[in-house]
Image (cartoon, rainbow, N blue to C red; front, top):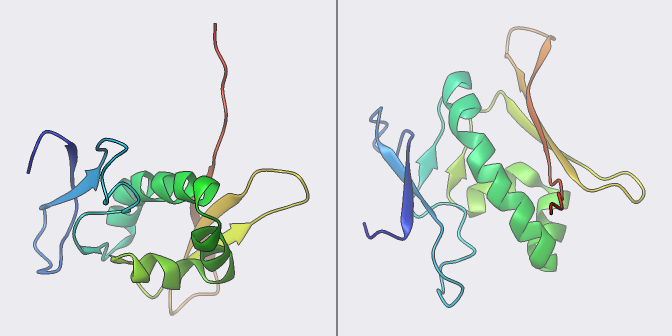
Length: 133
């Protein structure tokens, strides 16, 4: 791939591990600038979710900020929206979208094993704006 891509290690459709997923960080004129990933990403276990999903969900938060249709779809069904955008998570992983009053949206990722009622919070992401001088 060209120099407009950032490479991270993650499982791909073949299930091979490690492999790479290209997260596009190209110029503003690109038709692909709103892609979450440039190829199918199967995050097959808790460790790969913890390792690679934060980068992908960062792109989700940024895209929600500028794309109201995507924002509405993700708010209704986060996991299906990720799958529509070629990101697949284990069945035990739940993705929740939380928006309270005037606060910025938050995405919470939880793992709940089939054989347990215990829920493990894997991550929580929120877009934070920082100004500096």
